[in-house]
Amino acid sequence: MIEALESAVPDDSVVTLALRGPRGRDVLHLSAAQLEGFVVLGRYDRCHVRGEVFSDGVSRMHLGLMRCEGGIEVFDLASTNGVYVGQRRVRFARVTEHESFSLGEDADDRVHVRVRAPHDAAR
Image (spheres, one colour):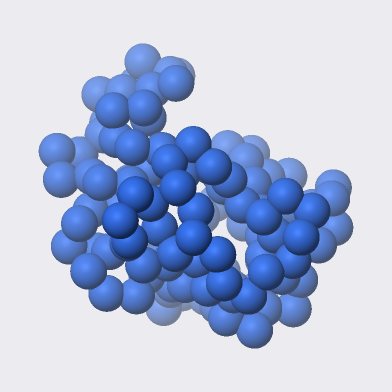
């Protein structure tokens, strides 16, 4: 599966989100064009990004992302279960390449997100 992910990275991908949660794993690639504006992650059908691994601990409109120099900015959209960097709940954080954040407060039900540059997507 790792080899398949490497070939699936779109040419215009600038950020890869590696998701791991109670419902499995997924890899999402975001382009520069997508990150020009505000990208919303959640379970709601109208979100820009809906991951198959999102559990009920992820709100319908949980998190907003924007590209910044060296990584992405994450914004908690008043979610019920929060956004965590390490063990600390945050409303806003700047997450750089190879750092991670989590969605949801229940340690067994959290979705962990790791930020990667596209060339790292196969690792």
